[in-house]
Image (cartoon, rainbow, N blue to C red; front, side, top):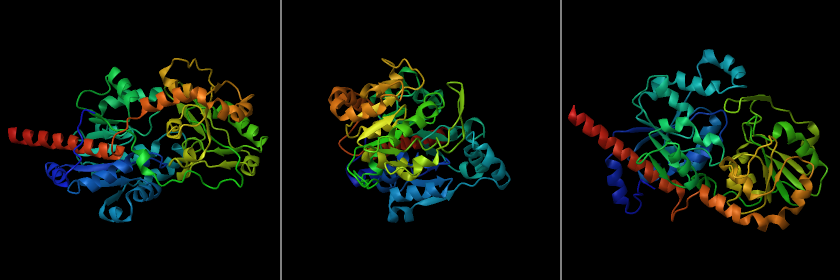
Length: 418
C-alpha cells in the first residue's frame, strides 16, 4: 500500500484530521438499485468514527439507498451524519421512467439536476465512473474523485479507461493492482491497496437462513446481466427447469440485481443487445426454488454465505462466495476460450459446462470433486483480496484521510503562492 495507515493513538488521528478541515467531502450513491452501497458505507463509517472533524455528507438518490447506508452506520452515527437527497427534475420523471429501462438515464439526470449542490464540494467518494461527467461535461473542474470500485471480478470492465481519470483509487488486492498498473490506469501516489470493505458491512449475516424446510444441498444461481457474457439469455430457463426436476436439491435464484431491472440489455464493449427473458410462474411455485430478483439479500452476501454451491458465469459475487471455500460451477454460454485468460480466472475454481445437459450430475458430484479445485480457489481468492491485521474499511478510511491531507496541503501551498 503506497499510503500508510494512521491507525493508533486517537490524538494522532485528531491532529491528522485537523490538517484537512477545509475540504468538503461527499459520498455519492447514485443508482437505481442499492448494490453499490455495501462497497462504500463501511469506509464512510470508519471515516466518521476516526476523523470526526472532517466535513462529510452523504448524498443519495433513492430512499432505499439511504436506508441501507443508515443500517450500515447504525442509529447513533446516522443521527450525527448529514444526508442530502438528490432529486430528479420534475420535467424529466416521465421520460426517465421509459428511458431508464434501457440506459442509465436517471443517473445522468440526477447529476445534471443537482449541479448547484455538487459545486460546493471538493472531493467525492464514489463506487462507479458515471459521476466523472460532473467534470468532463458539467464544468465542475475543481472536483477530486476517489474510486472505491464495487466488486473485484475478472471481467475486462475492471480495466476501463475511465479509472485513469480518478484522482485516487482504492484497490482490493494484487489482481487489480497489477492490471491497473500495467494499463497505466493508476500511478504512484494515486492508489492504495486496502482489501474488500464489503466484508465489513454485513458481518452479522447468519451463515444459514431458513429458506427451505429441509437439509438438502443449496445451490445459488447468480447469472450476470451482460448480454454477451451472461448465461441467463441462452441457458437460464433450462437451468431453472433442471432444478425443478431435481426436487432433492434446493436452488436460490439470485441474479445480478440489474438483470431484472431492464427488459433490454446492451453491451458497448461486446456489441451485443439482448432482451431479457421473463420468468414463468411455475418456477415461483416450486418448493425447492427460492427466487429473489433484487432485494437487499441479493447484494449483502446473504445468499453467497448461505449456499453450499455457487453456480454462475462472470459475476464478481463468486469471490464473495469463496470467502468460505466451497464448490463452484460455471456456465460457458458464449463459447469462451477461457483457459489461461485472466478475464476468466474464477473459472479455474470449479468445473465449466458448455451446456445444461450434465448440470445436475455436476451439482451432485460437486462436494466430492471440490478438493481438486481447492488450490485454484485459494490462489484466486488471495490474488483478488489483500488482508491486513485490521479491517479493510479501516485501511481504506485511513488511506482516504491521508490523500485528503495531501490535497489540503497542496491547496494551502497554492493559495500561499498566489
